[in-house]
Image 1 (cartoon, helix red, strand yellow):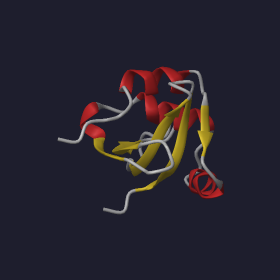
Image 2: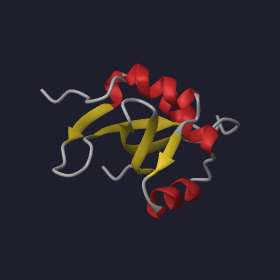
Image 3: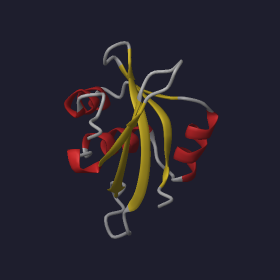
Image 4: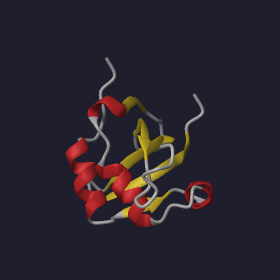
Amino acid sequence: MNLPKYALDAVKAIAKRHDIEYRGRIVQRDINNLGYELVDVARCLTQLSESDFSKSIRYERRPTDDIYICAFTKAGNEEAKPDDLYVKLCLIDNCLVVDFATFHLGRF
């Protein structure tokens, strides 16, 4: 059984502080293309549940990433269909920052 590397409660606590970084321009572009602001990304993270967890991916020279697949509706857009999101993240420096490797519409 594949379990998350990072405690979801820690991810949510960090997200509430908006201590979020994007790993590269592609992540930033994808978030911008969704019309999301930092507050939306943080809110998405605080709404993750254990049932949204998909898998963890271990890398040889990088931190392990946890992958979540979730449905999220941007605040003020409650009438719209939720975005199905693929979110790949890790915690840097033992829970100081959420680092996004991927944050885009799901391709399932």
